[in-house]
Image 1 (cartoon, rainbow, N blue to C red):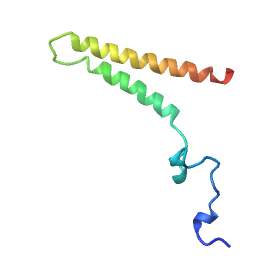
Image 2: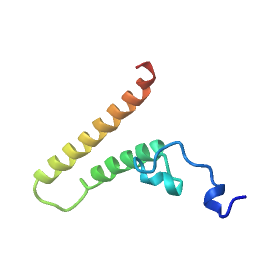
Image 3: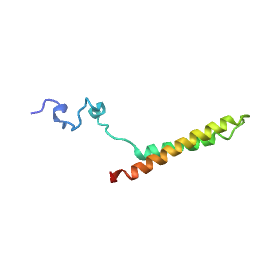
Image 4: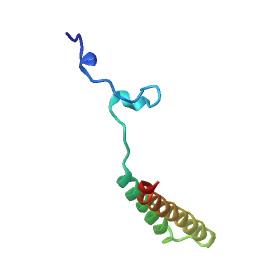
Length: 86
C-alpha cells in the first residue's frame, strides 16, 4: 500500500536531473503564443516610430530591430513547417 501521494504518482519518463521542470509537471512550450508575442513585439517596435523625436537614427534602429525580429519569426516558421521532412 502506498504511504503518500508521491508513491501513487507515476514516475516521469524524463529524468528530473536533465529537465528539472518535470518534477512539477511543466514540460512543454507555447509555440503559437511565441509567434503571437513575436509579431506583437514587431508591431510595438514599429509603433515607436510615431513620436516627437528629432533625429532619424532612432527610426533607423527601430526599423532594423523590427526587421530582424520579423526575419527571425519567418525563418522559425519555415523551419518548423519543414521539420517533418528531416
